[in-house]
Image 1 (cartoon, rainbow, N blue to C red):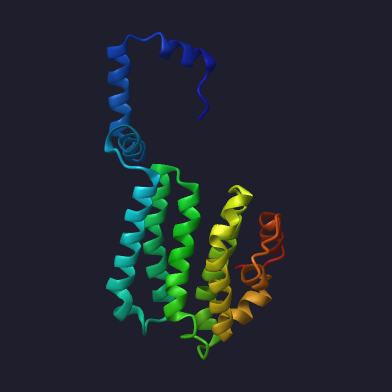
Image 2 (image 1 turned 90 degrees about the vertical axis):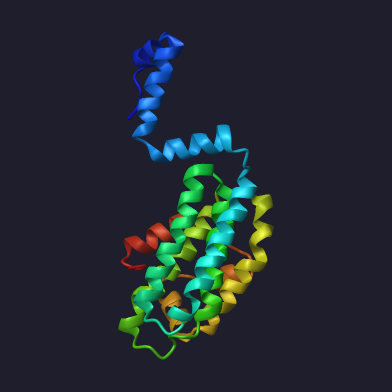
Length: 211
């Protein structure tokens, strides 16, 4: 909703106590805004410190579930990845940390692939396909997020992208589906992600891929 200009002016003329009362009422109904304001005005935390906290949470989640999901089906593995990615979504909601969004998504994906990339190479494609597509779509998402950062920051993630590309190559089924759906793993390995990656993804989806 876009605030009307007259409404903005009317709000600005309110007495301070009345403004405070309205703000408190709004905060009661908006937990995300409450958490963000607490972070910015009260906590004393920085984006970097909160990023480290989120990373530790991800590491803990992966460690706690490692034994349970090592032999899981692709569907269960995807469920665990989605649940853990909620840590990143919450971090970004509160801090608006765009750099951390890229870093944490890369860390999560790489961590899972290091353990499971080769596990489903002999799985029937129909069983593993949804999981593979989920992983491939996450790579496209991360590449798109990276391209929204300043280009001087790309080098920070070059080694991680190279490792992810090699992990793709280690999983026969994953690599096969990546190629079929238009993901050139060389973009990752050679640190040469196209500037128009968002348009490439949109075009692929429009032609029925990444589904």
